[in-house]
Amino acid sequence: MGADQGSTGAAEPRTDAGALARQLAELAREMHGDPSSQEVLDRVVQSAVALVPHAEHGTISLVRARRTVVSAAATSDTGRRLDDLQTEVGQGPCLDAAFEHQTTRVDDLGAETERWPRLAARAGEVGAASMLCLQLYVDGDNLGALNLLAGAPAAFDDESEDVGLLLAAHAAVAVASAQKVENLSRGLANRDIIGQAKGILMERHRLSADQAFDLLARYSQHTNRKLHDIAFELAATGDIPQG
Image (cartoon, rainbow, N blue to C red):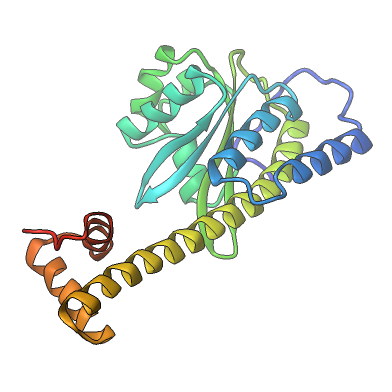
């Protein structure tokens, strides 16, 4: 996939394919064994800066709502500030990469007065001129973007993009897998807590399982609190939460 804007960075010997394959294999091994999603994000962004030619800073922006992303991992304050600035002004290459299914390569952020005028006007606040932003996308799930930065203009080239795309594909699978494991674990934990709370009500008030659950649901609706929070408080204190 070509970026939506080319770069004329200085030509250098291309990355050794065998060395890159070994580094990616090592990264895959490091992410094996059910690490947390945050650990995966941190490892991916650190590896991206190390592996992608000319990258000096890196971040991963995760989608949280429509046209909204959060800076979930960063190798430096420079990258995090740029993520935050794009969220603040509501435009920028990270948002385009995350939401418009495209690789975005930027030679000079301050000169992008047509595409992102509000961001370009404040580009000097961040200390990065070049950007390479790649979407993290798996099986219909739009996860966010891997963003790489460099201080000099026109730092990224086709080689940077090729390596970045390869790394982003690996990263998207790893991040999605870690998130699914965490969501499953969280769901099982919530179910256990609700089961404990139901047991307390069943024993104390001689209720059936369905009646105990209905009672918890009524408390949740009456107090406008999540069912899990009601169940957790009951399981922890033995007392029915009051509204």
